[in-house]
Image (cartoon, rainbow, N blue to C red; front, side, top):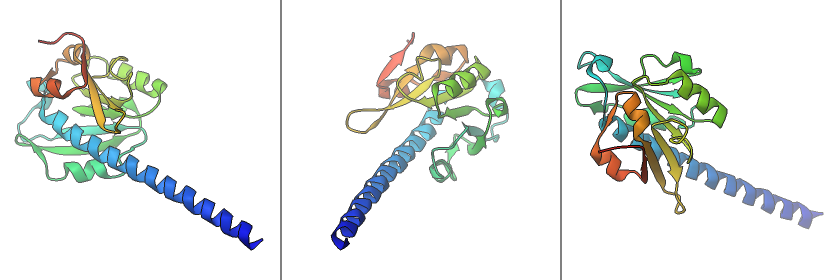
Length: 182
């Protein structure tokens, strides 16, 4: 009985270690994505009437369950985009997004489609996850490559419909670009 108990405990310990490793990898993934989001806001130009006063914050919102676990706040704390501070808001529903300049949309296909439909052609930078996010009409879609590195795809047509200009520097960093671009 003791040998069986020890074996079970060792097995449980191994499973917990694997779960902790998975959590650590996911935490690191979202730290990297938070840093990318900061740089995206630096390399996107919104229509002047959207941003208003030069001291007004650029607001980055998440919709639904926030996968960042505080990494977004830590990354953005004290950062400026030009003269503008960054603000973070966590929203439950897409219809709460007015006032956001950028929105991170985690979640399944249904939630993504709903959110993109609610924001259709609004001057809001939409960022999400998965290979298909940009193909579904989002502007920037994160994906993981074979080496577990975060990459992204840009949908220029979606950005153009929203009247957002994406810097050529950001385009050069993308894994791929969908749609027409100079």
